[in-house]
Amino acid sequence: MTRTEIIIGGFGGQGSVLAGVILGRAAAYDGKKVAQSRSYGAEARGGAARSEVVIADEEIDYPLVITADYLVAMSQPAFERYVSKVKASGLVVIEEDLVRPERKLPENLKLVKVPATKIASREFGRPMVANMVMLGALAALTGVVTIDSLIKSIRASVSKGMEEINVAALKKGQEYTSAMVGGVHETS
Image (tube, rainbow, N blue to C red):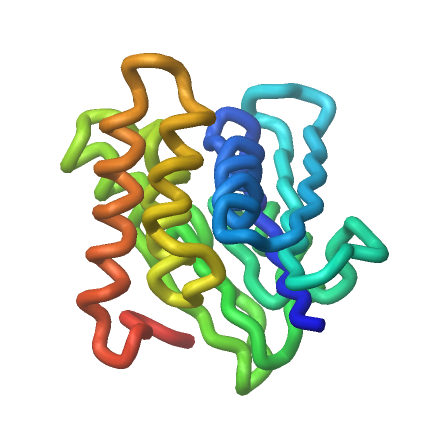
């Protein structure tokens, strides 16, 4: 059985939970089994927020992340809290302007820096779609779900009138990481 575990973490208001919902729905559209859970800090906006997504080919016997294959960290506290839950051979995608990895990471752990908020602000005038930039980057780097399923999921998940900007942000994240040499733009 193939089981893939993903944590998406950030501050409340960055869309970490929505990104997890969209990722989980996309995996279901791809014909996979999915379990998705979420957690919020004491404050909704500005507090900690996390989404866990487990994707498998067969029934999922335990719905929470045990050891993550992938971490998307959109804030420093999310990085610090969850990086130790990532497999030594896993992938960590960070918001490069908000996360500074200060500790030495395992040698086989890949770290990719994406300027998601900068891309979202510059390209769309909306920093709030940085979560979709990060989701596009994750999908391009891992192939965990198809871009077509992510687009379908975005259209089914976001507010009316916001579908196209979110799809465009997803594609920008995909383009950013696809342009990387060997799929990794910057590692540490």
